[in-house]
Image (cartoon, rainbow, N blue to C red; front, side, top):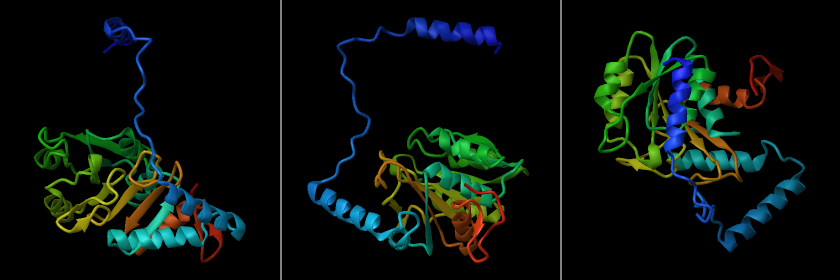
Length: 251
């Protein structure tokens, strides 16, 4: 579509939109709820962090990572600054540069943006209209020799009934399977929790998610020790913690 045609189409759509009712009240998309007893416990913990002299990557973060990994049922969890950073770190680890990554159309734009950030090309896969989750048949059709892997999104905390078939399909073709579990902390399918269904998963701790770290944050979960070490490095400017040097690009 030519730029002028796009502009005309946009103007046409805008012209057909109903006038905003000045008396219309706004609906808050999300309102985090913290019971009084939780707030008291949180403030006590925050005070202990502030008084500890270590407010970054300290013992509270390590404890959170260990407890979340145990809850999900994996060996490792690594806290990062957002769910998008978690996805970006995973896709960088799998080196999707100049390759394709399958992403369902029903997702937040961060799922595709992370592929672009990592140098890959997102290829959108249709969804099943009955579940609003990825359509397995369409996923199989989208695979090409350039396909590196799949980002499986658990929209609204829903895990596809085809997750086992998708995992087997990916394994047989040498494709990685990464879960976008931003919505899915606590979700499970056949006794396995979200975050333990692929090679790795990305969780969001944004204020609107199931659990929050205070407004922003994310987590990576995996059983792959090398992957966990890479995320640990990337989240601190690419530092090799054993040698104390920055040997890769991080942030």
